[in-house]
Image (cartoon, rainbow, N blue to C red):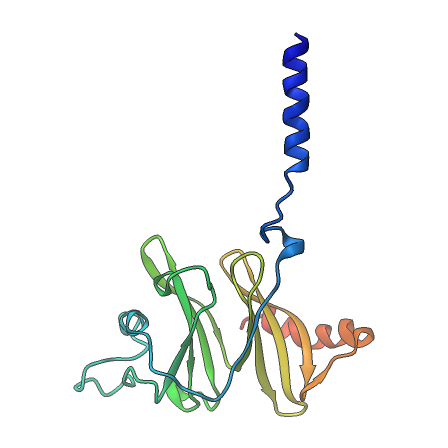
Length: 194
């Protein structure tokens, strides 16, 4: 009986003391930020196939109502850095496509073998920040006709991105004491239907 208690005690001590020191704890995680430039690099071939499947673009010369799958009109970003492109990605479109006078962003995700557009925003991607949960946080800039550029942080919640915080207005950080009032002005518009 004492031997069993001793082994149980050792097991408890080992479990309690086996805190991870290999960078997998939330406290050890270091987020990396990618600042989005104006470059339009070549598109990933897997992304092109998926975009064509979703009728975002086409590789056919005979289809005139869908833009061609080219980096002249689109660029793609990875929002799950530890996964393959086939798991999901972000597409940003130039202004003028599909009747939008501004950039459009769609977030594509694979679910049960099918590709879905889970978010659509009329804004421009500014930053992608890796997060502990494996889905990067996004900073998206929106043009407000009265105020200017409003930069809103979006985080993955459940099965899509949700806007959670207004970080900047016209490239100036929102002061902590103003956060609640600024968020109360801008975030409900997204929650009503973005």
